[in-house]
Image 1 (cartoon, helix red, strand yellow):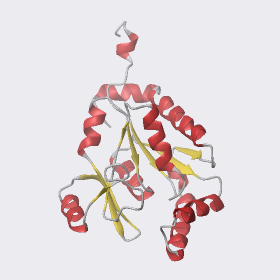
Image 2 (image 1 turned 90 degrees about the horizontal axis):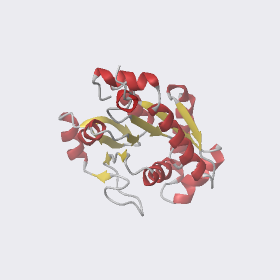
Image 3 (image 1 turned 90 degrees about the vertical axis):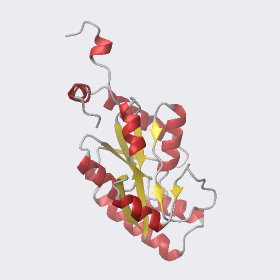
Image 4 (image 1 turned 30 degrees about the vertical axis):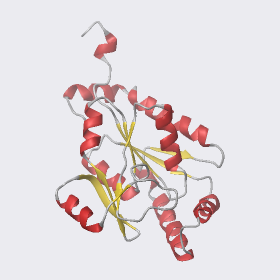
Length: 212
C-alpha cells in the first residue's frame, strides 16, 4: 500500500450523475446553480428537435437541431442516450462526457427518465437523482406560469409526470424542491455528490481503470 493516502485513495476519474424530474420542478435551475458553485463540474447540454422557448439560449438550455440531423447522428452512435418526448427528440452527445470524465471532472446530465434508464443500462455506476416539487399543484402552477403550452399540452405533461413518479424507485436519491428554497436543494445535490465521491467502493472500483 502506498504510504501517501491522498494519492492512494483519490478519485482518478470524474463521476457521472443524472438529474431528472417533471417539467417545471426546477431541475434546470438547480443544476445551473450547482455548476456556478462548483465550476469544475461539467453540465452536459443535450440536443433537441423542438423549437426554443422564449428566453432559451442556444448552447445553454439545448442545442437546437432538425429531425434530419438527429436521425443522422443517432445512426452514427453519436449519442450517449436519446429519446422521443412529446413528439420531439432529445439526445446527449457522448464525446464531451467521456472526455470530461477522463479528465477528472464530474458530469451532470439533466435528462428525462427514458434517457436516465438508457444510461443506467449502459453505465450501471451512474447515480440517478430525481427532483420533485412539494406538490402536484406547485408543478401545475410552474408549468402554467411559463405560458408556453396549450391546456392539452399541460394536461399531457401532468399526466406523464404522475406516471414517472410511480417509477421513482429506479432512482438513488430524491430532492424535494420547495418554492423559494432552491438554495437548500442545491446544497442537497452537493451533499449527494460529495458523499458519492467518498464511497470506498467508488474509489476502489476506479483502480480497475474504468471511467464509468
